[in-house]
Image (cartoon, rainbow, N blue to C red):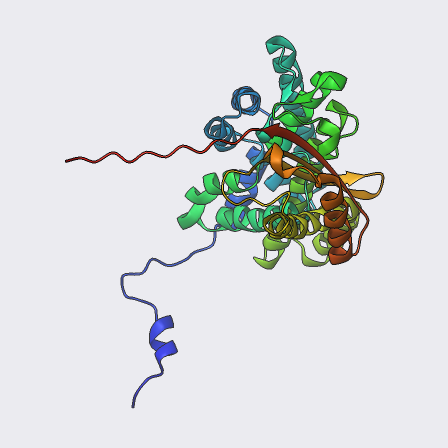
Length: 362
């Protein structure tokens, strides 16, 4: 009798290691250790904060990733989730105090680091952490699930480093400290004002964006990690689930700003696609040859209107009807997306000269 393919696929191999769960007492003891703020915890967290601050200021992605890997902040967050699942108020309080102390530590180091360096430029690494959306919440949920499950399976415990990279905890806090230090003196390094990125209050909005991203990651990890522990039969089902529901209701207040940011991402992507299509059609803004060089395209909201800022270089011979073409272009975009659009174009008029030479090897 032939066996179905799926039966062969799921049949355990003789050499396969059993996927045993971590013993409940062992996991509880580990979470107790995670909840305690020790000197090594603060040392590694401080070093992580220093790396994150320097990496963010210097726009070094590798340095920021290094800060994520060595950051120990994931441990007390998981112990907090375990405390919710087991309805252990002592563990919840101790873990919460450790997370709060670690948060203050990282924000303070970010603040003092920028004050010491004297930096005033907000680069791409910082800006990338100022507008969290539902996408970031989804990442936090997936990372929290992976982190909690890794704690219950000794065979995959080494994957926790990947979880730390997937969901950034220290960099957003460092961004919050950097934003507080920059204040109103913050400026962009790419020639645009920060209000064109939706950051009307400069450094304060940078700090608020970083804090929102951290809270998003924190809430996502705690909620899904507690659920994973409950589903793995750790803790008290009824009491733990009731406490988890209460915690989830608290995290629900983060959804509106995240949903708004996700809508902005959707609109921005659609808008940029339409911009690129229309730039190829319009005679003034066509991108064929060397007649036009688009430097930057930035999209954001200003006074409840979509605002597009375009910086470009163009052949001065093609600028005779620039304003008329821009008005027609703006009307078409507004009709396509169903929203009012304000477009501002800064054009650097240039004289275009094309040279060509062919060198022969023989």
